[in-house]
Image 1 (cartoon, one colour):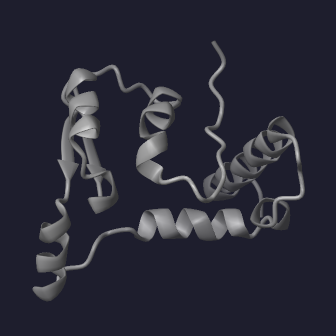
Image 2 (cartoon, rainbow, N blue to C red):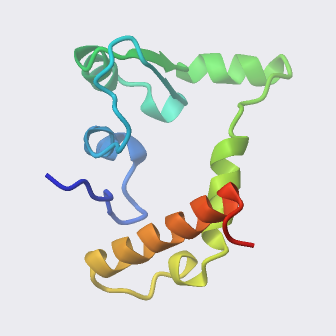
Length: 125
C-alpha cells in the first residue's frame, strides 16, 4: 500500500487528523517504546489511547502545564519544525497552492522534499 500525504483544508484541527497522519508516517513506528511528543493541541484521551495502543509513549503537555512552563521562562523547542516550514515556504508553488487536484500538490511536495534532502546532504547547492 503506497503511503501518501494527509491533505485537508487549513481550517481542520491537527488533532482530528492525528490518526491518519500517524498511520501514513513513512518511518517505522512499529518498534515498541518509541516516544511521541505533542503540545496542548493534542491533549485528549483518544489520542493518548491511540498512542498506547500503537505501543508508543505519549509526552503531551496538558493545557495548564504549558502555561506554567511559560511563566517559569521555559520555551517549547519547536525550531526544527519552524526551520522545515521555512524551507518548504521557499517553494512558491507550495506556499501558495495553485493546484486543485491533491495528487498534483502531493507530487510537488515530494519534489520539494527531495530538493531539501539533497541540499541538506550537500548534493545540490
